[in-house]
Image (tube, rainbow, N blue to C red; front, side, top):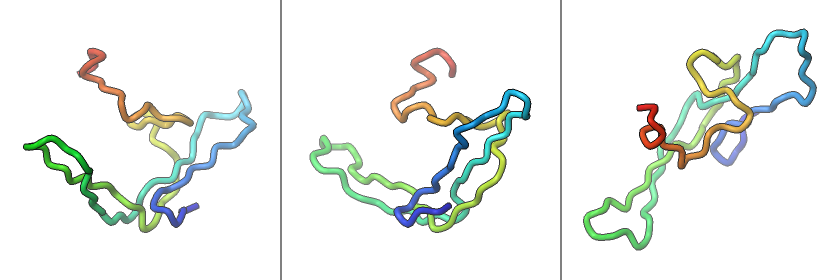
Length: 87
């Protein structure tokens, strides 16, 4: 299901059976447009431009769990792998 606000929504079923294999369907961008805005009050010498993707269409399929974060709630944007020793 593609939302008109520029992101792709993934629905996760409430019931999960221990007898069925683990497979998670996810939705992600198929086509994107990049938009930019200028952040106010940035210190001198810092580029205040923030660019982000906006979904124009979505594609849903099985999540490749061996190479992707397929959790119901992903790690937050403040997660830093270098700080935690994973780099």
